Length: 353
Image 1: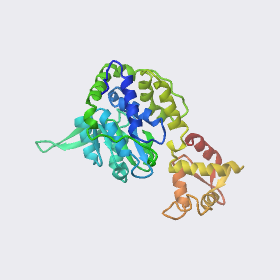
Image 2: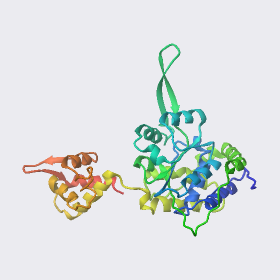
Image 3: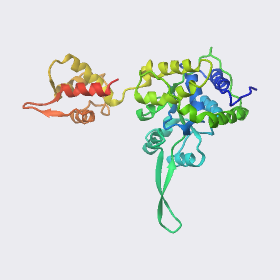
Image 4: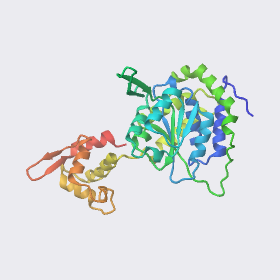
């Protein structure tokens, strides 16, 4: 059994990365480096004002998501794993135990659960990670009670999730292993075997946490501001480690956030703007009739907008409401309502990658 020392944590983080490679098939080999740094960060989280979620997804079941959560559970700070959780249980366990929460089958748990999704989103930054409740007192009155939402959180599910969760996450893609691909089985006592590692990481965090969080790091401005914020703790940890960790985190960031177009999926609104941009590039006038724009979007029966409205084409009312959110409004003219191309171009510049 490997000896771990809080005075030199690099071999321990290397060990975590090696264990991930030994037990899990990843779509991208750099994922194990990102996960190892994220696990280390679960011990340091209170030193930062923002910490990303970890979102683990696969296209189908049996791709190793639960196995990955089991490994994270063995190494992360005070981890608690659940296959389902209610909103009240979510914030009460954070308030009482301050765990690293690992939620399996997140696609089922989060689907349509606006309250739980709101709680998760609020926990992205320490400043917003508070839920205020009204609870009865012994004398029949009510009092306000603050519940913390500040804790490391990892979610595993099939398919994608809401943009609000994905933009707050480091995203890990899993794939089903082929017959020719072999991984080691996770022992039933895996968690118990790594108690010394967790104690070591805890001692290291108490000694080095503040200085790591204050470290100035250089992150390429090749991704969104939020992605850079999410990755900053990973860069700070990596730059305090020896071996190749500074290069590893840079490679992981580049491959997972910059080069991977699926890492930052377009929202419904930005998809709409992207399609409109194609028309505007061909249109040399200063205005475009609202009816003409709608006709362009729905003219192909296989287009997203032809069947977007519960299998039916989008309407002028829907299009107008969507564009208003980006500061683009219909303008009345003598014969028809129009959209000003200048306003559309401004929306492209502000919201499209």
